[in-house]
Length: 424
Image 1 (tube, rainbow, N blue to C red):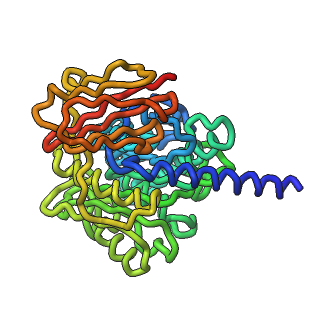
Image 2: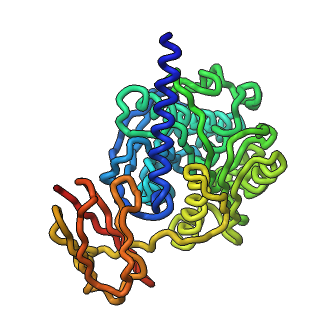
Image 3: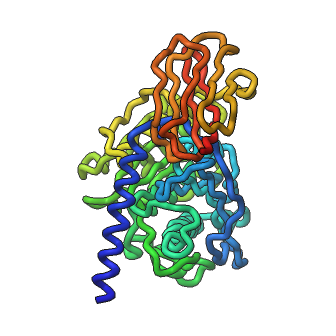
């Protein structure tokens, strides 16, 4: 009887979440910037022993859409790069992605994980050290996914849609994403790696980094310039992947080759994004593969063109699974151009809060807008202002429930958003 009641409750929760997701997908949520980023920092998600046998507390930062009222939001767990020797959850390779995805309506968990190799720098790491470092990272990745499923089942602090959890990683984080998806049997793990006697490697595939008893599977992965130990681990029915990689990458092989750490330590033979894509295509597993032609490692760092391409294609990939949009692996429909810093000087909303009506004053803009839209706090489009030649709008709040809203104004060469609080 209790089991039947549980199944009924679970089914009802799923139907409610699906109905809410359908409403969220009706506007620009997950496709464009309609929020600002709110960050909760240094949240403990687990602990484990590092390569030097020291207990390490594992932390993450949660990026959330500011003012969002949705009760079930897709989650992207994001892992930084750094050769499994360093890096940070606030590093330049991941922070911009986390900020941008949160502005689209995702919850993003940027994680720190155990780094270090047993014999680095002396006498020098070998294939065993490198393979074991990857497994530590994957154990921590799985613990982070389980952390949010545990939270959903207990306090529901982060309001996650557990059917839409994705894992993304850059460089070493990309290794973690691919291994989380495709290394699902400890028997496949290379025999030269000691998962019994080396520090922090026990616990099989799931590991012992925290939150046991909860699933660590994800719906799909995003790999930015990472690689997989062996494409033979990919099996029919495995997770879809979005792969982005420079074809002149001198850090992580674009195809299949020996990876050389810091240009000095030959480690092991790995399969880069080109080879992973070939295997996924062979097995009929959905994937997007973007080659950054002529580019070296992580070209999205410090280059706005490649950052925009990375964000755009990953956005298209994600929204296919969340909202059912056709899979589009090409660059299209650019995400909102970077907002000007002094929005309040150019876009005026008053009175704010508003009870019966509000004026949107755009008279300080250089040209009339092409689009003016109003979204609610869940990212649902609630109003489209069709007079695109006007510079001032008087808008009735009738029919708008009390709460937080966001004006989104697009012009030929500008993009602005400005909040509105409605109170009745």
